Amino acid sequence: MNKKLNIAVVGATGMVGRTFLKVLEEKQLPVENYYLFASKRSAGTKLTFMGKEYTIEELTENSFDRGIDIALFSAGGSTSEKFAPIAASKGCIVIDNSSAWRMDENVPLVVPEVNPEDIKWNKGIIANPNCSTIQAVVALKPLDDKYKIKRVVYSTYQAVSGAGMGGWNDLENGLKGEAPKKFPYPIAGNCLPHIDVFLPDGYTKEEVKMINETRKILGKPDLRVTATTVRVPVFNSHSESINVEFENSFDMKELREVLSTAPGVVVQDDIENNVYPMAINATGTDETYVGRIRRDDSVENGINIWVVADNIRKGAASNAIQIAEKLIEYMNNND
Ligand code: A2P
Image (tube, rainbow, N blue to C red; front, side, top):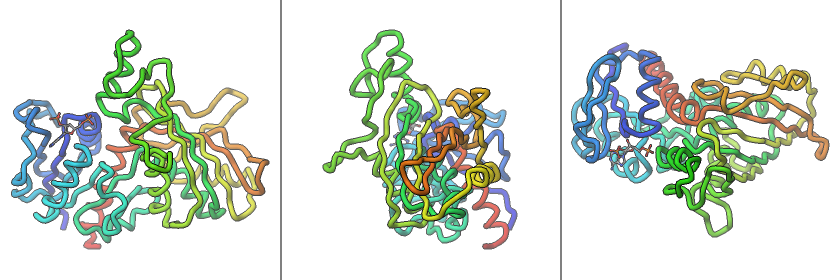
């Protein structure tokens, strides 16, 4: 087909929405028109994008009545719940960053390095996974292909940008001694083992998202996986300690090689020179950094790894735009 597309960004004024615009400027997709939407509060706001002035429009039920091909949504779960089906009914394909549709069996949940083919069975909505899940599965997929993962234990150290502008402001203002508005306690100088709401079984919704989404993306519904997710006083980029147990035995040298050659992965692991992944280095990039790769001798076939990525780019905006790029490729090949 190779026609130029119309693309909408929903939530264009938000933390992820603004990064959508930045990444779109870097990528230069084959686009005819862009449409930028947010809530009534920002309607009429002007911003410069692709060297042109754009006016933010209020998102309404009629917003998609003009031949929009792809819509990138990051405006919260309730906005996606209501407006993604409306957009899809008008022939638009929604790439949704919220958690609203991720576990719907009619909606593919996609990380392009891991399961790009799932894009092909979309019925109008494609879900972008949770930020902490995306970087984890980029590292886990090549290991699963080679050694068959049996069990995963996640412990996360998540940046405040994952909680949107409100989270960012709480850390910035908290460092000046102000009380928090977004989080229940100060985040400056603190760690909160509490991301999203608590569920009756004692886990947080963030932890359950990581568990369920990992299973869905890897196509392993019975994978044994558990998680503890923690908000830390870091502005941007999530860090994760991941303990992995395999069915098969492995050679450490070969395992490092598997990670080094995996798509989207950069191994940073030279402890003699204090080289390991760090949030401050991952920020502004789209790669997933893996280091501290070492055998876990407490089980038969286990390792520990430290995985870091920019949660707003790879964990949200860039992953969604990579999905859009793949989708356009499939559309052009009539797949
Ligand atoms: P607005 O700026 O008008 O409130 P963040 O997660 O960084 O807080 O960003 C949330 C994004 O979602 C913002 O762009 C916000 O727009 C947008 N948004 C929130 N509620 C709605 C809604 N009902 N309709 C459209 N956009 C919304």
